[in-house]
Length: 183
Image 1 (cartoon, helix red, strand yellow):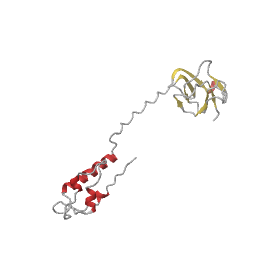
Image 2 (cartoon, one colour):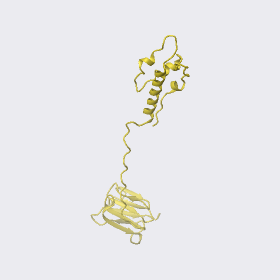
Image 3 (cartoon, rainbow, N blue to C red):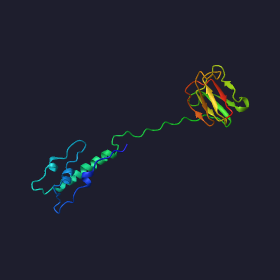
Image 4 (tube, helix red, strand yellow):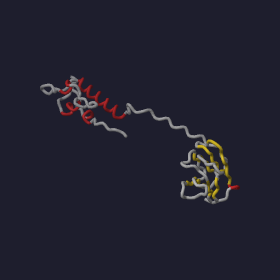
């Protein structure tokens, strides 16, 4: 989010005289009274000389320094944490075109089970072997595949349809059966 700093008093300063002094106008007073992070400008800048001859040149310098410091603090994330290193993407498991690959462990680890359309009926529930569940899958069949928590593709448990070309390094549940759809 970008913060804005009010600098109207600095932009509206009158021109300094030949001796470097400013007229005792409201703009000159405002330039010497800009707050800097909640602190007032030194008393020398707040005092208006008798006779209205204006501020010494050092007050203008202080006012500009205060304005520049305020602007720098408002627009620079001084104490911002360095950007976080992005997590390394999990390495994709080996899965060829036309295959549905399921791994027992998350991150494409553990034993891999491969299914192809030649041995998997369209819209047929295919259970993984007894005692086996998958924690990661890759669908390269060219068709959507639904992964089921249930061994009989029941919709009472968790299930999710993965489009062709999807790689899921961690499934939110243990996959125990799959179903390949026509399209």
